[in-house]
Image (cartoon, rainbow, N blue to C red):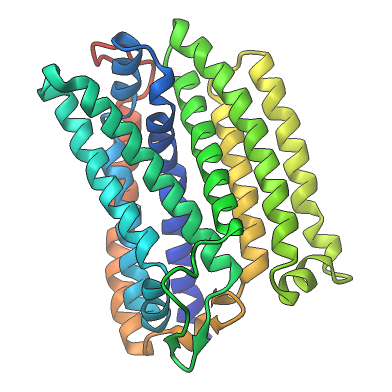
Length: 332
């Protein structure tokens, strides 16, 4: 028997992962922007993401819209709980998009737009990390409604996840520049990638340890026997990938560090899945409790079955057309 609720959970999960992977590296470039020299370095960094950055955000729309349509109860609880970081993220993404376009069209104020691009990227990233931390630490629910306060999302744990997200996106941005650029900018990207990787691994370790103390269910899912025999493979694999990553940087490989950084993100997301599955609101509401009626899920699945392959096709085509190195003049 087909479980449509699980299928929709996987679709939304895929959209969120695609967003983190694809928009993560261009947000990371915005985070790194103040450390790049004014002129050719900044122009080259911007040109490396110019063909794809706006398309990358398609997955955010799919994830948010899919949550509303497929899991309306979860949407109605999560949104009021996370109003502040979600609104901050959306406003920051708008600022970032405006700055991206206007820095080319308004050369006299380019310094201002560069700062706006960095600020928008940083705020959006921190807000995403805080929202994730607030969701993971638990949302107070009574009946079918959010029962917490306005500031419940702001805790040391959510700030830690926000900082970890900044380090992670900076890592993706650095590795993207390693892959797509040459010369002094590439050398600078190698150094930034090493520093960001160290910070990310430290943040992952701290968040993982702190998570175990948030809920008894988290502790049980990770450390109870015999499940620990499977869950222990995640930190083990993270260690192996980390060693391979630093070796790839030392050997000055170009594409490999980016894909190994994606592997680190994939392992972190796997760990998140172990902690919360099958809940949509961790330890409070399961995906089945929050799901829309079956007929609605079937109707939406037809649309998703058409649109998701189209989105994947044009995204893949864009990356293929603009493959290779990029210069500050905008040529690949």
